Image (cartoon, rainbow, N blue to C red):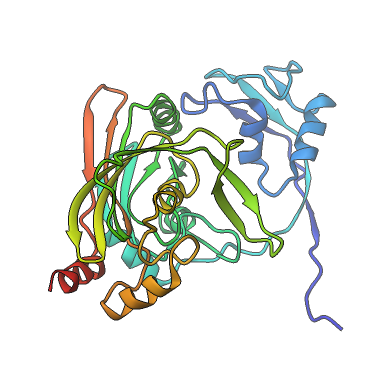
Length: 320
């Protein structure tokens, strides 16, 4: 017999009236409700909107209604399941994140994310950088990832502290006005003339359930610009600039050229990875080194994350 206690339903018997502030102006009603009704299924949220239980300024609206500052939103009582308390970051994780902060103001936070730390929880990870930051800063009303990095990739990660900053940076990225520069060590001799890789990428799921990205004609258009920084025997230190931001883009494009990233267990070469571990490179050698963005006040900001010590040591061994 299971020792687990059944999840007891909790009923919020209060009708709440929430005034929309300037930070939430322009947000869809359904997304606004998801924040105020955490744990409530999306289907339930859409149902209470359709039935007219949610009102804006005493009137019925649709789920895609864009809120205006000063709007008064009526949120009805909703039955929801009681959730276990959110996991708290360990002292080590909290310390690592605090020490990795590169920049902070009232609207933006920039972190030099350590390798091995997920940006968000899920897929067997209880919490990532964003959940840890929310637990570390309970007074913060808004903390959201602007973009993502793979778990094993280190470097510059943007976190918005205001919804207006999140919206602004998303527009910047979608219009190609941000610059993302990565450093990577690849196996083999990168072809000097191969400075741009244009290869469409398609997400695929293997029979095992593992998700993998492949170059495929039906994939999404993907462009990466590469520049050789240094040749190190059987490896090449390369700089990559993203023109598009697809999942695993740099990793798959590098493999497509015939020069997989050192330490890449998904797309790399097992023999090379084993050999490089003996020379000190024991992780994915991919680092988000530089990010250039334009802030809402038109200031151009450049954030740089130094190459982690463990990667520097690996390079020193290769240089002999």
